[in-house]
Image (tube, rainbow, N blue to C red; front, side, top):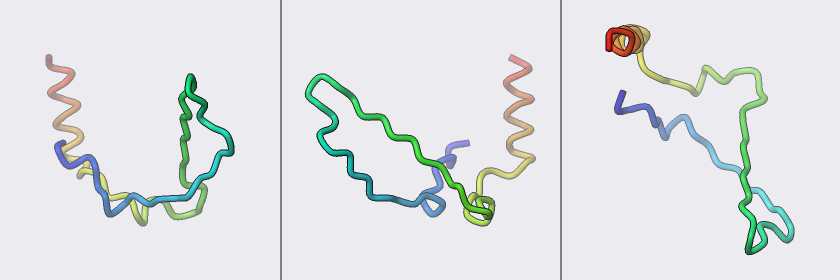
Length: 60
């Protein structure tokens, strides 16, 4: 599954956090879709390819 990063399905957002991060801190931001149609933009791998990968992982 080398094509797991599908940049067409990604979007950006502007985020401002005043006074962060400070020199001894790390700022971690996690954002997710809260709308009603995420699958309209998420392509992903076909189910057959995912099933084959899962089967090969279980066999090893």
